[in-house]
Amino acid sequence: MSADNTPGNFSTDSEAVDSELIRFENVSKRFGSNTVLDSLNFSVEPGKHVTLIGPSGSGKTTILRLLMTLLKPDEGTITVAGQYLTHEEKNGKITPASDRHVREVRKNIGMVFQQFNLFPNMKVLRNITEAPIHVLGLSKDEAEERARELLDMVGLGDRCNAYPTHLSGGQQQRVAIARALAMRPKVLLLDEVTSALDPELVAGVLDVLRDIAHSTDITMLCVTHEMNFARDISDDVLMFDAGKVIESGPPERIFSEPQQERTREFLSAVL
Ligand code: ADP
Ligand code: MG
Image 1 (tube, rainbow, N blue to C red):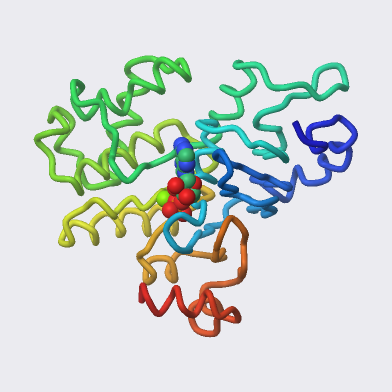
Image 2: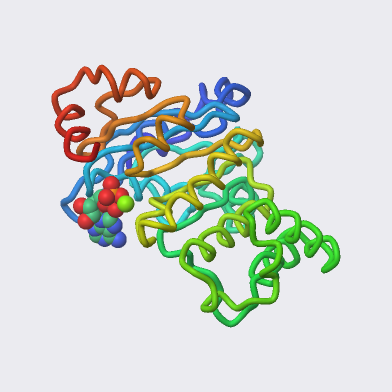
């Protein structure tokens, strides 16, 4: 365990609460001898859309998995909406978080994966209502009303009773987006959500995400290789290499005038 997990190092953190929805502070993550994130620092303000770009293996998915608490950092702290993700404050002391605390903080976060991950045995509507009913305690009627609104928003209002396997990949991904939003998260994490789709289905999914980015105040943390989309929706772009942010800034600057050779190389390969 590192020095960052000792109580003394938490003292300044509460200053971050209001202006930052997500904060990574000196976060390191290793798999064996492979240091995937190396004392990473970054933060995201509420309502902002931040895109993570960088070569395969640079640690982008690891960041999202840490936020989903699917992984734990080896060092450092992650704060979401002013609360530590893997620690909690009890009687003025910082302790490892209880499962209950983790569940509460996690409610702020929704994620859409590359591989949709819908429940195959449930119809579309129930895919969306399941968590709001069981995790948020909504009534079936409330959850269904919310689900229908979201399905309308993603253009699938007429597919409530379909099973996922009867939908195209693009439609399944739009259901997955609706399912994530049904929990009313403050942050939506998107991990290469169009990478597994046939090319002709990509635009429909990106249009839905553009619409969400422009018409809601949800905070987005997005990993994508769709650079035009990133340019459209991002307030900030973070370029990763080897577990560090090597360059960041507004999309116009990162895409048009990258300062780092590594960023230039990467962009010329993907653009
Ligand atoms: P990216 O999403 O940027 O492509 P990842 O965050 O998926 O990168 O992976 C970063 C590095 O961590 C890669 O070298 C990958 O092999 C390694 N890695 C990711 N998850 C695991 C795991 N569960 N066990 C071992 N190594 C992993
Ligand atoms: Mg990845």
